[in-house]
Length: 164
Image (cartoon, rainbow, N blue to C red; front, side, top):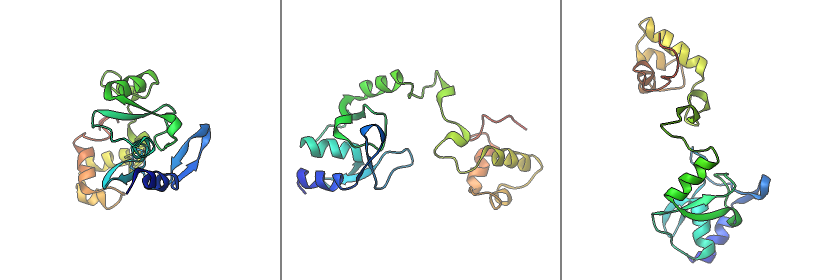
């Protein structure tokens, strides 16, 4: 498929949003980025839009960055190319960078896009673990797997909660 046809296909999936953003209406990854294919390869929708619009193939060391900080945005006027270093520096300057030196900025618990349970449920799971229920028994009561309960039990998830 030509880059022009690909661009038209991508444009057909965009809807206007605030701040002039054009958001991807197709599949979005859990982290909020749209996903589509270009030249037979899956990639973030904003990257596909940039490449189709400009008729280029970016190398792996080139990121397509958002000036608007909207992960779903594919408005070509909001996108720019930069190295991974440039992208991380941009994120840090806007307070979006999660780093080891600033763990308080990392979304934990319910604030994480990966959370399947609430903090109250995690506390209840820890209580049930402390009274001796098995991970399998607990998993039947909550919308998580036995492995998810085991991760709570061994403090691999929800470890920011106080220990029982």
